[in-house]
Amino acid sequence: MSIEVRNIHKKFGDFTALDNVTLKFPDGKLTALLGPSGCGKTTLLRIVAGLEHPDSGHILLDNESATQRHVRERHVGFVFQHYALFKHMTVFENIAFGLRVKPRKLRPSEAAIREKVAQLLELVQLDWLADRKPAALSGGQRQRIALARALAVEPRVLLLDEPFGALDAQVRKELRRWLRRLHDELQVTSIFVTHDQEEALEVADEIVVMNHGKVEQVGTPASVYNQPATPFVYSFLGDVNLFRGRVHNGYLETGDASFHAPTHQDVRDIQGTAYVRPHDIDIERYTAGAKGLVVRLERIHAVGPLAQLELLRSDTDELIEVVISQDRLRHLQLKESESLVVQPRQVHIFLDHAA
Ligand code: ATP
Image (tube, rainbow, N blue to C red):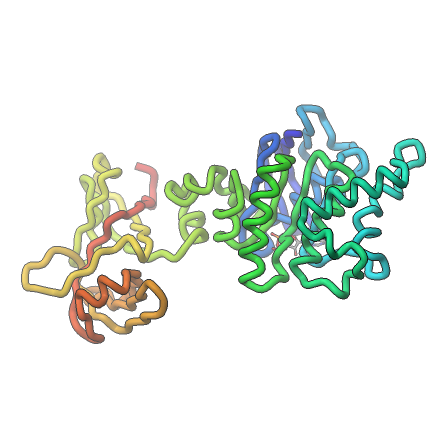
């Protein structure tokens, strides 16, 4: 089922939680709502579900107006951050619950319920836990059971609100891969709320980046990462160095250096900022006449396959972070407090005023 929200506004008292949000969630895709805490992700999810009502705007499910439709008529399944499993019921009974409480006419037979639950347990690969109570499950197992329970009533939309938020990093990673595979199998339209950019980039078909109740950008993981539409998106999706300067004829002049910015060939003398990822910067040992920005190596953090360098610009006293491979570090034989020259391989420029 496709979902569309149009011009959604929502205030809590004087606070604007959603400010004119218009979005399409494509049929059968997994879309991540990504943004910092408080940006309105959960509110939007609750509005899609019918648990919250917008002050104005429309919701369409499969191109039909659903703004007034009751939550039960929207055919949504939920999974929340904090496992909402019933403590006194077994795993089996938890999954069966949604089927057992259906109106008599729609309720499957006991045999059909048993078969369905068995299928779901197999789908989430936990059939051996059917008779356990939630207290005897790990956090990751509980979330898989919560997902099985949400799927039992065959929802046309699956809404996941930080489903792995309470789990430790290793389990989170495993579960997001597992969810990705499960989604490929089921292809039910899903919206996944997260504030973790890595999670969104790995799991989603499409990412909606939100900030302060507004949509900043919508696109595939690769497009939001490689072509961020706003400075906020660029900074939110990864570490970044900022270089203020003057953009002129395809170059950004910053302090004593000049960075090539081929995308801004036609710009004449406008202030702007170059955004550069730490792994998109080349470094060389300083030699007289070397091209680039002169810096002093302050610290080396060399753990794992990559080394992180903290560099101090000699022209502005600002710090820069650069990430290089351990091989490169060994090759250069760098020592703290020596002078280096840095040159970005890839800059992304945001102008102060549109050119
Ligand atoms: P988080 O990741 O922290 O859950 P979020 O992006 O999901 O954040 P929302 O839960 O949608 O954010 O909340 C958006 C803003 O609206 C927050 O500032 C929150 O405090 C406020 N808010 C949400 N629900 C209510 C409510 N029922 N009454 C008053 N304010 C609310």
